[in-house]
Image 1: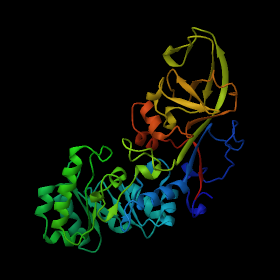
Image 2: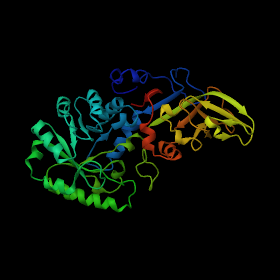
Image 3: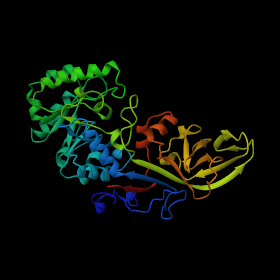
Image 4: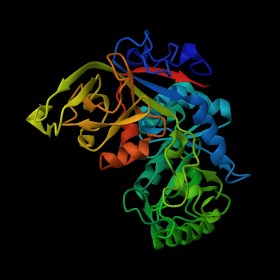
Length: 391
């Protein structure tokens, strides 16, 4: 089924087709009911729940939250949030107030923190929806203390090395014992790791030490430091609340040390629209960026950069057709991609090509495009036929 409450998972008209349950073909031909777009994004909600349990198990006795910002990393905020709630997650993080409103609509009882803080004039919206701002400056602490008067919770964000948002360590220490901390309802002190995926970086030890100093200045208030990679970095990062995001959705939190311990979550498939044979010297795609070195067999797929598949993968990435890697040729265009399927003898009109899945994971796709798997996930477009499985 699509989610714990299929009737309530739709996210407006843009998601209206996501919660049908077509039979997903795993052979070489397309499912006949995948209409509306030539590509399908399949999201395994069961894998997300299993990944959350796997991450939780790394720190027994600690709570494990879920970061579901950016539409749950492109996977759909409402169905993902409901799935994680059913798995036992009770605390969620988003980036923006609008994202928090969506999650609140799906989860009336969850604790929802907004990472990007308290923008001027936004306190009434936080109070109306019982949301928790992550306060990153003395001004924000003062504003929230005045607005909430200790009746609503918030987090205190301390910058231990990122130099983006958050109070500097001396600023945070200066607030220890300040009545505004109580008036602001601070129930969590948190920071963000800079290089947790690189365990040998010296900044990790510095951040761990600085955060321990801050925690000691706020006794009795829970702490949160570990992101996805931080969970595997050191037990000293675990504190009271784990805060994974990317790993929940199948990204590798330990890229320099181990095979990916997470289950894959997303699968992206597109059907071949047309097969053509070209002679040596023929060019393909915009600006003739690719020239056939010999007679080749080309296939055109129905997706492009408007669907979130990166244009930077042009000439570098590949898709799988009947399990055979087929290079992407020329430039990825807005709605179409060309593959060289010369080696895939079974490729024909209607055959399914896999762009994410079957070992071709988001990290691999990201590397081919000169970027990271995070960007691939969060860029997944809204035009696909979406299917949720495994809840």
